[in-house]
Amino acid sequence: MLNPSRATAAANDPTIARCQERAARLGFAGFTACNLFAWCATDPADLKRAARPVGQGTDRVLEDAAQGAALVLCAWGVHGAHRGRGARVARLLSRVSGLYVLGLTKDGHPRHPLYVGYAAAPVLWVP
Image (cartoon, rainbow, N blue to C red; front, side, top):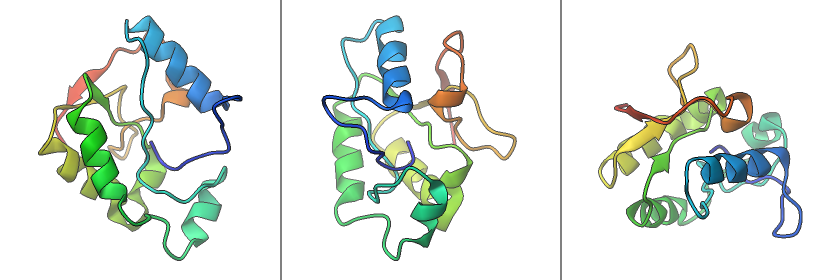
């Protein structure tokens, strides 16, 4: 997805709750959420003001998670265009796994799961 929120192991935020429900509906026992950026923010504007939002080692974490995943669902929305990060990560992950989306924004970015109904099934995406 885009960036870490304030969710914790004890309290989901709306995005994580929706991801958890979607994973269960798709028949998965769980899911791992990873993000383009390591900067923790609830507002994309805060993320865009951060001097170094990507974080050291983020690409390696994304690669490792993709290698062990049954399905890699890209879902960062339009803000993934910040610093060209979405395109970079799509290239990185496509070398490791097939990529799926729940649809694309009008600008071609993988739609964020908070704004996609449960009826939408993952479809293969070739960035």
